[in-house]
Image 1: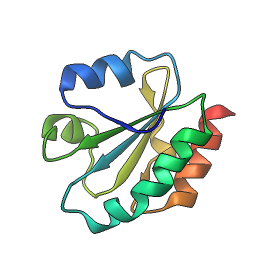
Image 2: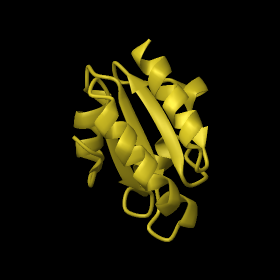
Image 3: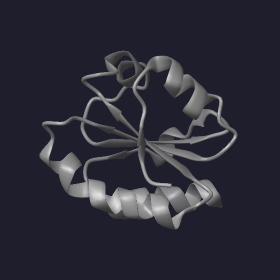
Length: 108
């Protein structure tokens, strides 16, 4: 399915908070080098893990959503299950292994 970009707070509410599926959200910025470096790995994970939805949020476009979740570094990967953020799984920085471990924990 790939990583889909969320463009509005309402779309975030619908696709992440109201989702009954496990969700990974990549908070990124277009000017962020590490965000660009890790993007191909995240795209690969999204295609390998069919039971998990992957989305990305541009923090400059959706500042309110990023602020509500306390995102202060890019990239930050937030993990949700049944609409609830699982804070202990949050990964800050370009850390594909950490994201992969978070996905495994979501599916466990």
